[in-house]
Image 1 (cartoon, rainbow, N blue to C red):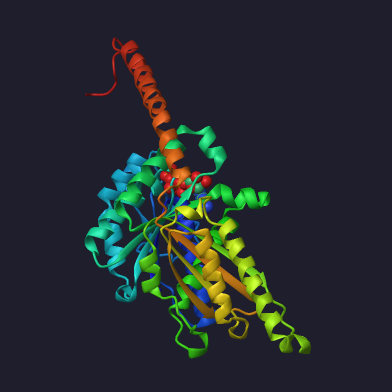
Image 2 (cartoon, rainbow, N blue to C red):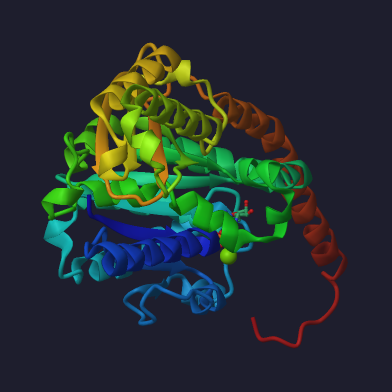
Length: 393
Ligand SMILES: Nc1nc2c(ncn2[C@@H]2O[C@H](COP(=O)(O)OP(=O)(O)OP(=O)(O)O)[C@@H](O)[C@H]2O)c(=O)[nH]1
Ligand SMILES: [Mg+2]
């Protein structure tokens, strides 16, 4: 599957940058392309300069709202982010149109952190616009949810996140939910390592996007998972996960003979990788709530067998009893058995419901604060009414 990636705000831009690195890896290691073009859109020029892999011209690193913000961001006010995106949307659309490989692209992936101002505000606006302009292309959102400490310390973060989620869900074909907190729960040393978190966020997409683009027969599985399968699976709230089991590279002679045992050992390695993928999903959710799912098994050709693929399917069926499940095998890896899982069309997502409820709670607080500021400013102005002004008004 080939995608166009657009990142909004600092978080979104860095994740889009990460997808360019995935594409560079696919090109150099596998001789295929998975990202036809990538863009970063921001109100902050310094954030755009801080990217590494997105092409460094103004058509790929797009500054919006420069006139209003002076290139310094919107300071977490996502309504302003939305307004600027609406005003400067032509800049984004013109840049997308200049992509020479646009017709080969299967879908758009638009990414942003929901807790800030620029990404949170502009993501749904541009998603809606792209959906209107390119009715034949799927548009997916990848939304990064804030860390717990950000939610606790800043009402604005909750408000931004909830409004971004509600709007994204209304316009995108599917919304990948990525919870920042998941990555530091697993490894506390990642707390200050955004680059590592971003690499972990993008990694599950690697095999998924590559599998359908292979041209050489030896890398095409018995059942290929292609763009069609992915698009049929993705709908509404979605999560993605990745797990792997290491295989021993050196085979002892007796291991080749013990076919039956070898098979069952491999199957259990597959189940182990599936367990890891499910427990490392990008957001905690109940797999029973998924109405669609897919899994992709990547392994060396001689390590895969139909029995394993079938058992993995049965296993996932037990975990997601309601879901229509699609699957594929991808003879590629060396020394590992890699499992990618997507759960989609989730009909219950506690984290989202929780954020919506919390945002209604903080709405009053935010309004009260705004009114307090306005009344204090008015108080100063009133006090200065009798003071002569030096300006000619
Ligand atoms: N995973 C990840 N999260 C990030 C990254 N940068 C910021 N975030 C998260 O994204 C949210 C803030 O969004 P930003 O992208 O910094 O904000 P912005 O869209 O640039 O908006 P303003 O700076 O307010 O104009 C917070 O919840 C951060 O924890 C990143 O590189 N990776
Ligand atoms: Mg910013």
